[in-house]
Image (tube, rainbow, N blue to C red; front, side, top):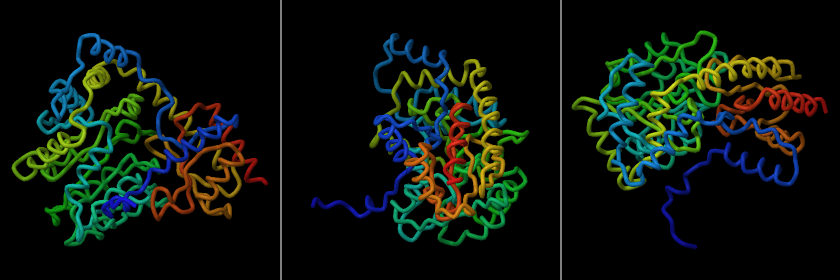
Length: 394
């Protein structure tokens, strides 16, 4: 056997892609599968964005771009950030990357090493823990509790910080739970972080505009007291239905204390992916600066589906589901069904033709839950709920 370094043995998976592959394989065999597993909008990328990429190709934008992204693309992110958060950032703090995960990869790689601790949400996006373990750091789960609306508790989070803590990862609105942390709780956290000036913060805000019931997203950018150690992750994938375009951005610390981090991630880009492809960056500009009607239409559809999913799940035997306030996921409690979550998810796919994800794939605190994505049509959601009900009745 060829020798590889042990760090690669510590890499985990994002099981949503494994479930997608399995569901696709079953569908290719003629099975009728309703996929509520994968976290991507079922809407097409708005046409004006597609046309911008086509125009860029026809105009000859076929070459390399700067490792940190075209200035015009970074300036578009600056405009969008000012609109959504009221905070003005410098284009020199903005990095354009091939999706959201490279920001996680870079930030966790910077702060993780043997002996260090990194706090991350649990249940949470599985790549957080995977990358923490890859670096040799110790992953410290921050509980996201159902009774708290799957928001983090500032007091509980601060209580987990030790002298070994290097990085705190936050995610609101959250995957997989749809939880939204209230501003008051974030303010408490930021106040408490004053006692821990050497702890950096990675705020995953990829679902920032996806909130419901009057909830509003509270960006960590709105707190200048932590700006010199704050990394914000965002991107085009969810808001503009551009998952396959692989387009993300991040905003890095400014000032003397944090500016060196930006140069580190720029060097990582040079060594790893060189740059983000040019036509997609022009599409990204069009997405930010163009009409947002399609985004509004998509969000209204998600809101309607959310209500259908929650009502339908709560009507099923031994299943309960609190109402998610953000993103496009529901995280129902299935502990009273008598099934372990992953076994239930597997059986539903094999026997009922419904693809969803078992809660333990999102962390050690995910047992007793499954994740459903309502980024699918109302018709398919209703079919899935009916199939789940029939399966449980057996």
